[in-house]
Image (tube, rainbow, N blue to C red):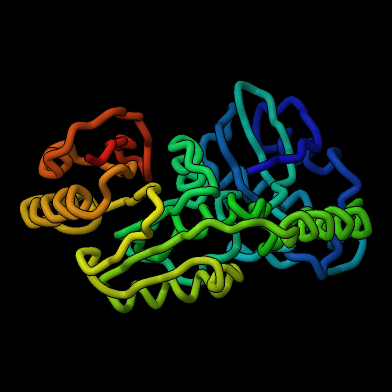
Amino acid sequence: RFLREISKFSCNGPASLYQGIQNSLAWNAWIHPSISFRVDVSGSSFGLTHSHFSALQVKNAIIDLQRDKWGNRSNINLHNPDLCIHLHLNRGKAILSFDSSGNSLHRRGYKIAMGIAPLKENIASGLIRISQWNASIPLVDPLCGSGTFLMEAASIALDFPPGLNRSFLFENWLDFDQVLWNQEKDLAIRIQKSNKELPMIIGCEQNKEIANQAKMNLSAASLDKIVQLKTGHFRELKLPKKKGFLLCNPPYGKRIGKENELQALYEELGKFCKKNASGWQLWLLNGNPNLSQFLQMKCNRRIPISNGGIDCRWLNYSIH
């Protein structure tokens, strides 16, 4: 998230919080009763140890000003507000900010459908960059799920700006410059549409329902003409003749599958790599070292990664 700081003030209880909020900004210029908002709170201070109570104080301070001026008040919208106000409390101090996005910036705006344990877009992008894959060589995900690796790889190859397909709450701010924002978006689109030699990016998913989710996501991201998606088992997948990278996030028995049932999957993946991908690089996200051993391949690098609170390793293998 990117928070725009509005003000700082001393805060030693509910009354000083209420007063500090009212004095922080010309609220009647920023929030007309037709604008909905939400209040998020982090931290605590003297007499303010419950985030929900603190959020109510902020809300009351704003809507009381609205009622005094208009005799009306804004609605509170927890899921899709026009404005998101963030309050941080710590040791008698308050920091008031506006949240520029309303939800996490890892959400690019292209995921219509998500699998059971989706990989966050920003983590997928970071893992691809760690692998040092470049757009001149093929990239294949033999266990692609809803397609996050595929879409992030295609976006990197196209210089597609993260978030181009989504909206941001800063577009509702009083001082938002629509002309400047349109200029920046137009520039990003021109860069993205410049003539580039695109790599071969291929995904494979056995589960038809999840494969359909990946197709929906690729279409929503306008990447369905760039990424090839195969429905079926990876053992049937034909790799490009040009050597490239295999990237995947197979289940490891935490959120999907049971550990004692996944041994065969890892064994089969290892056999597939050695039989069909000699000279390729394999990068595999693993949260269970008991399973990765069944690949029966020698690991070159192990990079610690936290994925959804699970301690994982981004494993690299040179396939012979």
